[in-house]
Length: 296
Ligand code: GUN
Image 1 (cartoon, rainbow, N blue to C red):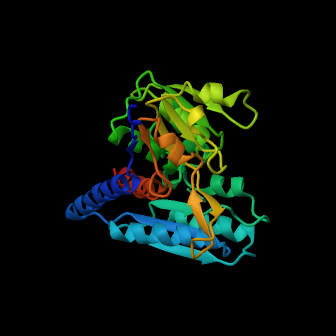
Image 2: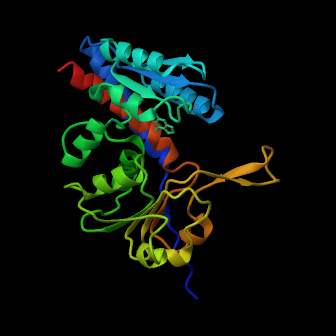
């Protein structure tokens, strides 16, 4: 009996650390030229514990690479008009290169209106309609951090994209749709299929994928029978499942059944330690790009 092939496990922690080092070099180069360090403002409204933890991570990582990051904390009942005023001030502040409003926002605030208020040249999340339009048209702008991070994982792991059939499961504005746009781009040159919860016979499509991106939000949804041998599988999911053996009572798993799938495919990202660390690294890269673009 032949032993099963073992996939190359894509080390998102290491690749994210490499990107953070590159950003630090870029920040240091600015300082050597007598320019100011890039400035990022992270706005958090309310006390959602997950958001607080993400925001702390963004600030810490920024400081490590020399980006001046300030977190602006506001109470849950902040009026929408006050938030729009704050964004206007940040748009006009010459020391601010990047503005990030942590989502989700409280129900009384219209998220679309808030994103629209951000200056597209400071939109380091890549969520503004102008950023989305630039992305689709292939113009210079900000790429949303999670899909941009996935492109880096593929490139730096030597996964061939040209002519590859990329299948994306999930059609969100933050991951699925921009991921499709990026993989279609000249230079990456994938043939792209986007699937979702209404897709008929999903396994027959995922089995055709040379590159499979799972962004569904259902624990261990993708099993070995749904993937092609030798494929590259990127797991965007972060799901909590009960685990009495852990002190905190749960563990994090992805949308891919890692143990099952890793014995069949060529590349796979773990959860945690795959896509997750890339999102912040790409935010730092976008903030450096914002600073470099603004002073040219
Ligand atoms: N909430 C969860 N992920 C994100 C993100 O990437 N950006 C913002 N602004 N909010 C989020």
